[in-house]
Length: 455
Image 1 (cartoon, helix red, strand yellow):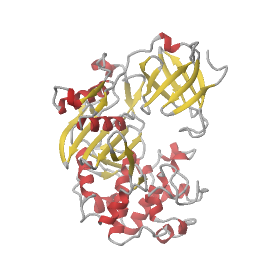
Image 2: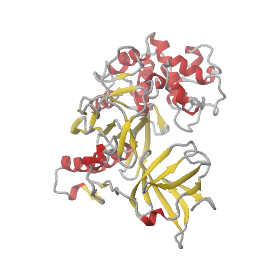
Image 3: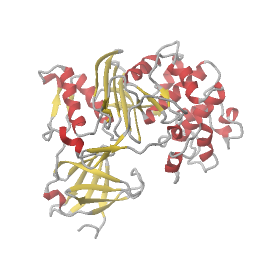
Image 4: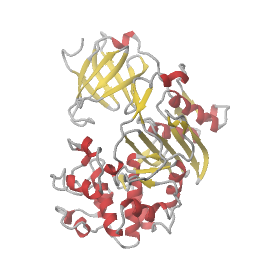
């Protein structure tokens, strides 16, 4: 499928740093021009929405919801949103706190009786991802978990008796299992299946008619787009199907860009959440909590709120700048991690700030292939601790092999410079003065060449 889909690919992609204010085009045209190369290289297919002060100022759909049936994406197409689902789970739990059916300091064991050491974990710990419970995504058989229907109870049972990663109270990364447990708690407190509970607590009150929780209900027709994954340099193929119930609470939701706007507007309503709960949600003391990341941005001169997610066949991202009440949402049915970068650059463009257009090449130059393959040792704090990754050449291209066996295709951007297509991370092969490969830069990490592995 990949080669056939490349017929519309524009071979010459602009490479430059732009300032929106200097362009004679309208801002809408400039945004569309920025997005087009991502679409043409099959690194984005979906919907982009830009809203200012609650009003959409740019909303456009791209690509196909179903390539094989030539069904195009529209503004009403529903997308799975992976970890952005945590926002809805957090909102449902906070609504129970809002109505005093729960407290942030309620121990887990008060709701899920018999949960191991549940008296030391609170609702607050789960919402702020500081529970310390073992994470289901790290299980050796997690791929098998995704192949079968699950419930919040079955997901919780998978990890509840495992040793904890740490004592409750500190953040060390995304806790998927904490949000599986929150889904079970929401069920227990409402007496409803999680999907119906979230509809009652969140989607219904906010008028989010195109949103829901995919729990593999028999006969359910969610009307979501079909998911795809990168194949080769610029192709795509159908993504492996999973049971979305296996991600209940942490990545099982689907929505539209318009409903995401309704959600952001709705959580600021006093009749939805009390002011003190909203303040907690956006408290800078918790940089990752309640389904949001909060960071001080020197680029925008303010604290920026964001969230993103990836699950087989889908990638989603959003960023919100409170000062301008500017929201950018990108929902894609391609499992390529471009959307987080896209929403930030579109936000910059919308504020007439410099932004970086996409720059990709169709082939790797011969000089970049010299010295490959080569292995690189990365430090313990790398995405895969102490990983040795291998960069090699095949069929005229370059790829990166992870210790897990997964392979990332590297798209060339300049000599010895690439973009990891799977994770949308910049990669650079570093050479010494004699042209010999010495290091590999992967994002902000540096791996040292392992002696005797290049040829």
